[in-house]
Image (cartoon, rainbow, N blue to C red):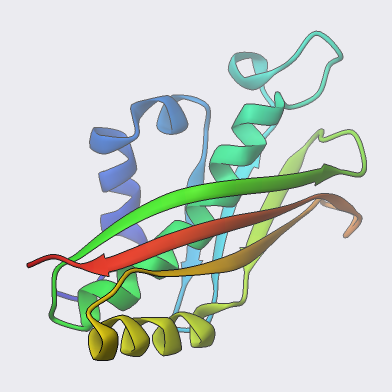
Length: 151
C-alpha cells in the first residue's frame, strides 16, 4: 500500500492524537522529502504568545518520521524504528504558519540497505528546518533514528 498525505493525516488522528489536536499536519510527501505544518493557535501556545516548543518538535519529527516509515514500508520488510536523540535550535519566535521540511529521503534508503545487509541496527540523523510565512528560519531540528529489521 502506498503511503499518502491523506492516509498519514488520518494516522495522526488515531495514533498521534496530541499532534492532531495541536494542528500538526503533513502537507507534502515524496521519496526525497516531506513537509509538515503547524499554525499558531490557542491550543498550542506558550505563555510568550508563540507556538510551544514541544509542538514545534512534533511537527519537525513528523517530517522526518514519515520519510522513515515510507521508506521502510516500501522495502517490504518489517523494521523497528526509534528516535534515539534529538537536537534543536530555536532561532525566531514561532507565530503564524510554520512549515518543517526534511529533504533527507535519499539518504534513508542507503541506511535501509545497510540494515538489510548487516542484519544489525543502523543509526542515522535527519534534519528538519522550520520556516515561517515570511520564509525566515524559525527552528532547526536533528533527529537521530535507529532502524533494525524485525526477525
